[in-house]
Amino acid sequence: MTLTFHIRPANVNDVDAMLKLVRDLAMYEKEPESARATPALFRENIFEKKYAHTLLAFDGTPEAPGIALGMALYFFNFSTWTGKPGLFLEDLYVSPHARNKGIGKALFAELGKIAQEKDCARLDWSVLKASHNWLIWNTPSIAFYEKKLEAKAMEEWMGMRLEEQGIENLQKLVVHAA
Image 1 (tube, rainbow, N blue to C red):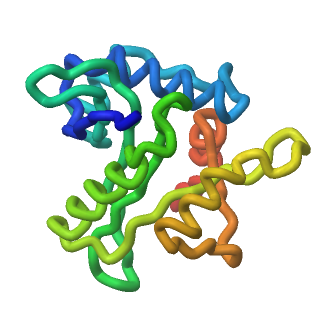
Image 2 (cartoon, rainbow, N blue to C red; image 1 turned 30 degrees about the horizontal axis):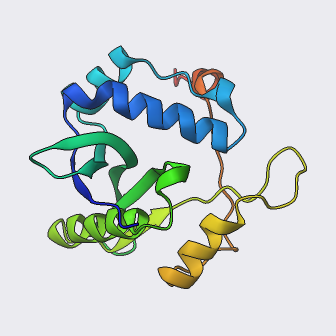
């Protein structure tokens, strides 16, 4: 059975649908307690301050949209080596019942258009390989990226992160000159 869907940029009225997809993604990644975003935080940081952007895939047509089936949340960064902006895909998620219907490909195609419009040198994202000593359970996503998109794994790079307490601790590094 063919699924009819369309993709459009999210707007402030989509916050609840976005948060549902984020919670679903957190469950898929076996980290439900980590999804702490709230409607107020999304409204402020995505739609008012514009720190990030979101594409949503809905079933149905633009004239008669249904439920949100998938999303791509992204933001722009900058490469000092290329002297150009880049697009970083923070999260891509498609609901399990809507997978293998072309939604992931369509979301990436839209991201590609945006990256070209903004003259981005790169489109980057991270892929969760394993968690809690489990075997690689995210194999279908990795296979999609490598086989369908022909993306290259950057094995020479290791992701690093500071969360809120770590960011606050950076202030302890400041040395004040006399």
